[in-house]
Image 1 (tube, rainbow, N blue to C red):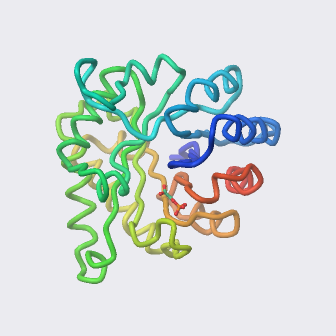
Image 2: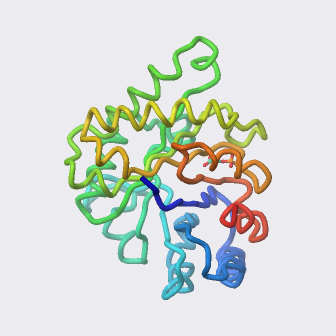
Length: 250
Ligand code: PGA
């Protein structure tokens, strides 16, 4: 089955509004419309609204980097799925390793967010990935399998069709050290197998699994050549129009 590639730029905590607008204008101008790829950008919260306006009527979709699972209420500092939809988001990144490492996200909070996003109508990009010690001690699949299973607990087969997964080995994020295409493929293949067990084979074959961790224009091709790699979640190289477009046009 041929899956449509999906390339997402995770801008993390970078870009003031004017910078975000300039970047997205560069991206819109640089896409020539022939790319058979879904393109997504995930600016920080303050830029979602202005960037969303600029993306209106363009092929680029807007994503948030996080959300809260409650619909509304006394949750100081949090943002709901409805608020993200309101400013034009189609996707939300959930369970990024930086959120797990620095902000106390657990498999349980990831699961709550995934279910809330799906219920509200946002399509989640769910991140999983092992840290270096886990890989070194041969526990990569134990960790990635658990994160996937728990993160998707209680999701219906119908909703699972709207998911994107992102395999991001934590040791490869922002380090310049990319997983080899073979290392990525091994984990992607196992994730797809697990999705087949949790849901069914049709859903597994349709699910898009991105790779993330130091993806650059010059290494994206080798990754995308792997049968189970369907896109990239890009940090550093998504902050310049030229390099992100190089990835989009792999
Ligand atoms: P990186 O980040 O491309 O800078 O390694 C990827 C990510 O964290 O999504």
